[in-house]
Amino acid sequence: MSAVLAVQAASIRFGGVQALQEASLRVEPGEFVGLIGPNGAGKTTLLRVITGILRPDTGHVLLRGADVTHQSTAARVRQGLALTHQIVRPFRSMTVLDNVVLAAGYHRTSGPLHALFNVSRGSETERAMAILGKVGLGGSERKLADALPLGQLKRLELARALALEPSVLLLDEPLAGLNHTEALQQADTIAAVNAESTTVILVEHNLEQVMRVCRRIAVLNAGAIVSDGAPAQVMADPIVREAYVGDGVVAHADA
Amino acid sequence: MSAYEISLLSVVGINVILAVSLNLISGFCGQISLGHGAFYGAGAYAAALTAVATHNLVLALVAGAVVGSLLGIIVGFASLRVRSDFLAVTTIGVNFLFTGFVRKQSWLGGEMGISSIPPSGLGATGNMVLILACALITIALSLYINKSWMGFTFRAVGEDEDAAATLAVNVASYKLAAFGIGTALAGLAGGLYAYFTQFITADAFDFVVSVMLLAMVVIGGIGSTWGVAVAAVVLTLLPEAIRFLNDYRLLVFGGLLVLMIRLAPGGMAGLFKQLVWRSAKP
Image (cartoon, chains in turn green, yellow):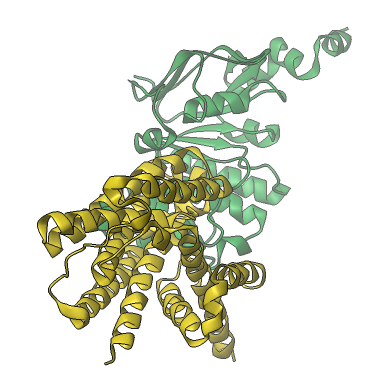
């Protein structure tokens, strides 16, 4: 099976900091990968390389076999990559529904001229309503996005990404800032999306939820993937414990 | 209708085209431009030169729109590099560059401008009708764009271009489209103005004009086609009604602009909406 997303030996350096050191990641269709790592491990940098906000100094990003290393974010999204931001970015002056309708109409907004000659929003509205229901925002369609609390904005962010009908969904801390119940619900929604054959890559600090829903975990440390496999196996990996806790403490714990 | 009324209505029509077209760029797409006078002027000069050379009204107006739009797309590229307040400053620079350049060019008449523009052949009333028709078409186009997916996408780009990009929007092409369409209409207004006065100088397209136009957009309600159109009419007639205001145009428009942004950022359209919303509530 060919990988739906592949990062090949991506390296990137900011001044004196080697943020990514030949990081490689291969994700097969339908997988549910949790990407974890301590603060400063390079998770956000890797995500930005995948989404095209940053270009790696060396290495490649492949989306469904095609090299997209030099393409813009919008171009990658058109090829089936969708992402949510860690800090929510709704269009606050628009209604919740319009936020999702705009995403659902991605084939109408492919170019300004094409967009100019398209007026109808019927089918997009229908699809957006269904997605809002799925993420648990049914009933809030007519509210201004500005009026929603953070927990619901996180769901809106997810709804917009789903409306793009992605083959790979990249989620940057979709549970951050949520209380326990909200996090549980949001994680379940994401698991349900994955069950419908969307590949999901989840970057998240909430290890409890990551362990619960992900079927594979990749650990990033110092800009490289140091462990990758089934959740239980990865969490038992001494390298991972070392990355999180630090050598001295691990030695002490083992003693 | 007296000659005075005809000329007043013509100026009103031209200002409506200018303000509504600026609203496409600054209101719909969020790209604040303080250089709309430059595109207006570029269109006027292009139309004047074409009119002198060909005596063809349609050709001259098309030339005005095309040249206005070309200059607009070039400046639009600047909007891809600089954002918000920096773009406003850049466009101010474009306006000063334009008037400074025109004043030094002998082929554009230099300080004396172009004074031999042939009549359109429609007469003063005919000109006025043509201008008002163009103003109505501009309003209709603006309303249509706002309803289309283009307007929808413009609003997203105007509010948060990074978020728009993650929703598969090619932000650059939309910004260029907004500049291209808005400045084509400004160029058309320039062509109409050239035929209306049959005499143009760089002064008619200076920075004060750009400030006045942005004041119309902000006071009318940034993003609201009808609000901006009404503001263009009122703010054109106001200095006529209160003559002494004419000498203090920059002060009055600038002052209104600041007051409006401070006290009612939604403009008259926003205040009107609030009023309707309040009265609709039980």
